[in-house]
Amino acid sequence: MLLLLTHLALITSILLTDLDAWARIMLAILMVTSLLHQSRLHVHKGWQSLILEQGRLHVRDMSGLEVAGEILDETVVTPFCIALCARLQGRRQCQLIFRDALGDEAHRELRVRLRYAQ
Image (cartoon, rainbow, N blue to C red; front, side):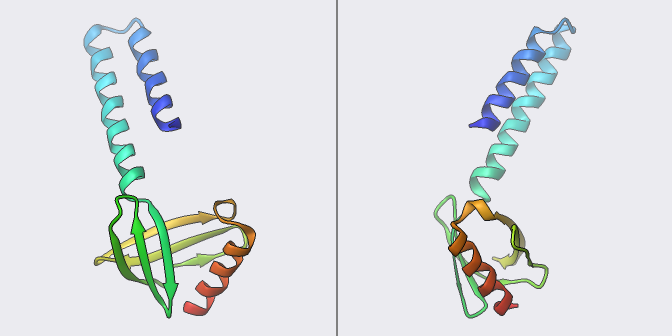
């Protein structure tokens, strides 16, 4: 929602400037293109849930597609943030999981499992 509001505010401010009409239209088109690109990245690339078992990772993305993959060695585990890198469907993907995204116990359990999985 914040992404949409930010883009709409920028488009409004572009249209209210005293630039030439063609420049305002071009900048507004660029902002709409940016909004579409960013919303596609955030909606379709995010992970909704993950299951970690015996070094394998099972992920359900935001579109509901479930895929299995492997955890890569580039995964970084800290008490504050986890950079979980995995190979899913032949492509390398990384997700940042911050401490406040999960409960303290769930975040700790994920950190422990990832350390043993590497």
